[in-house]
Length: 232
Ligand code: F6R
Image (cartoon, rainbow, N blue to C red; front, side, top):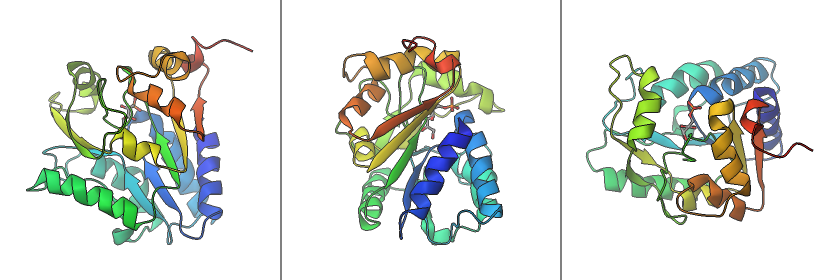
């Protein structure tokens, strides 16, 4: 799965003179970033000309906090690939004015020419980015409250077992503006959400179902995550 997704990233990077990638974090993506680092080391891709935008960040966690998404990106990708500092973007969860931070994030995406290729993970409740059930499909980057279920599922990453209650996330509307989207899912715990993403009605209750409205969205999933999809 990681290999396939990294090949898609490689193609997107090498087919564009000014590639702009949308990136996700979490356990689904650690293998993917390993593959990207390998490709960088083998000189198959260069990060010198890439711009990246991460989907989300916890409110209140500084960039050097070990459970922040900023730290995750630094640790899993950025420290190894020589990406110029000004070329990567992650929402600042400690900004004094969070509303302004969100508005400016949208402007930065626009000024970069929009996102060519967006990578997404998925929550067990169908969240994409941190757009939880109930998120409007035209939502933009904003501060959101995480559901109790999501906070429970993310506990394993937090040594303190205290998951922040809020996050900044790109909106579903922001995500849908990407030229192409790849959603990765691994494990049976994601199978129900995957089925609803593909086969369910398009509804605010399942944020990922909004992806049915996009005309260039591909799911890259493992066997377990496809448990409830029809086998052909
Ligand atoms: C994180 C993000 C989330 C995760 C999702 C799955 O940047 O956008 O939507 O992709 O919560 O997380 P894992 O991969 O840890 O199961």
